[in-house]
Image 1 (cartoon, rainbow, N blue to C red):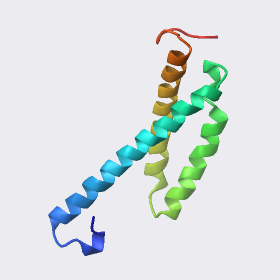
Image 2: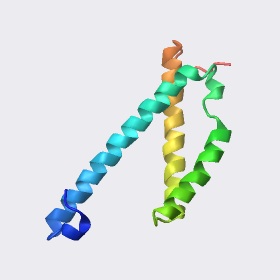
Image 3: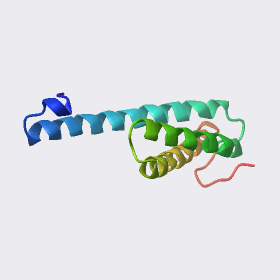
Image 4: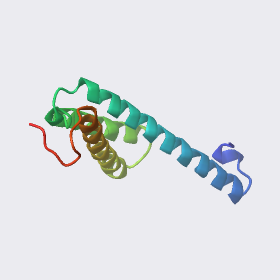
Length: 107
């Protein structure tokens, strides 16, 4: 993959974007694997959400966005969506590990 400065035409640009998009998707899959692995350390379904962890994560993503020259008003909601989707996936994974039905609530 060429750097943006090395690109000589639109095809080079599109190739770079497609390559990065594929890497982002692979990274999201790897992130989800970590999220699912965390389920083994969660004693109850209610412990999965960990709002204090989410509260600590978003300001750090805000800082990282600023350091990368990106707009935190875009990055922070994006990560909030990623985090909330991952929490839902972890709940599904936790329930499956504990033999619970998808719709069942465990107290």
